[in-house]
Image (cartoon, rainbow over all chains, first blue to last red; front, side, top):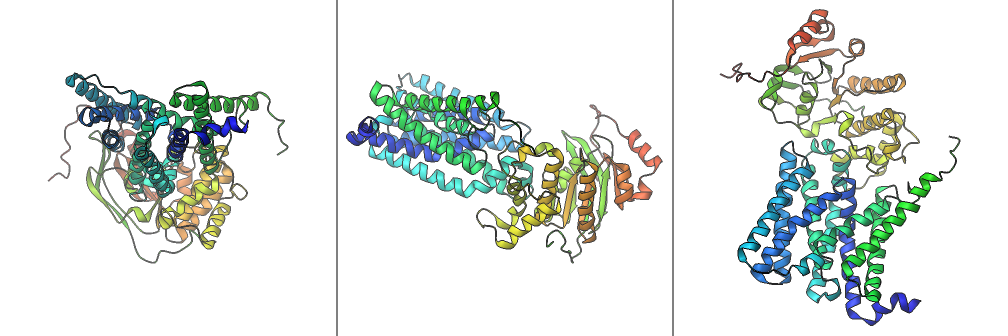
Length: 288
Length: 254
């Protein structure tokens, strides 16, 4: 049993790299995902992922399959969309989801346009599905760096971000921290999605952000315990997904996301904080 | 009780100079001029849509000013309690954590609570009658309990100017009395309290000053002189829907 669970990781270097890489992504992305779900931005992450895709595609046309090119392309496209959308949401009556949808669609259309003008058959397989089982040193460093930067930035922004989520007008009338928190959060979202697409691909990267956060809502109540639970769930999902991928010869990205999905469904059913069983077989009420 | 009871020795009055605030060019507050003295307890009253909340928003620095100016206020002098709808009640934080955000301006991004600030939080929570609720999540609170915790946050903000937007909506009489007691203390300690409410009896009983607003200022001054039947009737009459064909306003545009 022990060999079954840890064997692949002790025997194969690529599995070790995959595990380290995916855990690094979890450390950065899961707390960001927690705040996304709490801000009701779960689906906005999808939009952001689409906004990053054209940047990466254009970079691919210009530089080929270069790590720096793809990363910069994705970052630039994502940050431009995030900044424009954030600015519109803060200075007009449009809400964040609408302004983000508007800009990501423009970005996506531009990307498709550029690619079709070039008439080149772009192999976006890497960007769509990631590369977790073949991480080279440079990519591993990149994932670890983004995870670390993200963690530090999250610690810096934690207070204003929480206040901004609970009561945005309170923060807005006490100084400039409100825009710092807002743009800082969008920045965090973009860098983690870029890390995510190297590991799992643009479409699967959202899974690692949202699913652990959603699952942890059925176990924990306070914000700190929610974040810790969700990161642990993220770790468990990555570990299990990589094992599944190894033994059943599955693509690793989807295997990780499906593992996280299974944890989510189980939490939904047996979670102690409002799961289905908990609702259908409630304990008798207290005396006071 | 070390909180919310500090006197503000310096004189600071708030001037609204010919203030106009608009919504898509239509005035929501129209050429209002008033001087609010330090330590005043001012009720802002008027029909729905008269611009009361817009005025408070502008005083809190959340709305751009179309014309005229507000003097004597800056973000670091105002504690603002808006109508509850803007608060996300589902966010997973405790009463203590919500209340302690009142110290944000002092603590900033990183500084941790010292012992006396920790005690202040406890005092503020007791002052609003929520002792024992510190670790409750805010989504388990009733409307009145939530409003009490927001008052506790205002206590911790410890600002010379306090803006309250309909603070007593859906509040029981006990809570109303408790919170009024707090406002009375602020008033005694020379804090300026500006509050929007529809409760004329309350204003007559408690608030020395009244601003009667129906987009334009119908009357501003001592409550007894402002809340007359004629003035209230005038506010009702004066008030009408936006005129879609309205021309640019030339009043004071020399």
